[in-house]
Length: 143
Image (cartoon, rainbow, N blue to C red; front, side, top):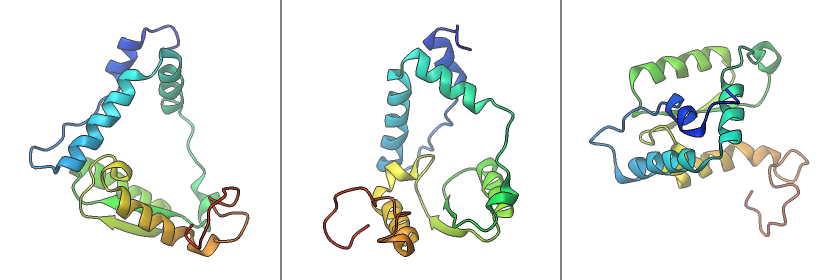
């Protein structure tokens, strides 16, 4: 993979088609993701594809008690719903946030909703070393 040219590596990444009835934010998010892929240097793309193709898996037993949030998006096709189902079975104690729309990249197309879920999730970590903004210089009580 490391020796393949960038255009060949880009062809290995398959983005599903965006539904015709998808909203503009979802279409823009997919367009932005594709644009980022097309601007990625060959070495970065090869590294990411190599990591994606590794047969290793996360030991879910070690994470059963971890504070996990799963973001489910309602406008994905059946194969993705199956994937979310397997993730839910692997982490039965996880909090589940539902977004009605959002496509493949809800953190881009529904940034405000996604951020609100993340803020609620991290609220219990506020003013602890585990807070994502613990080392940031942020004024106010927002995480």
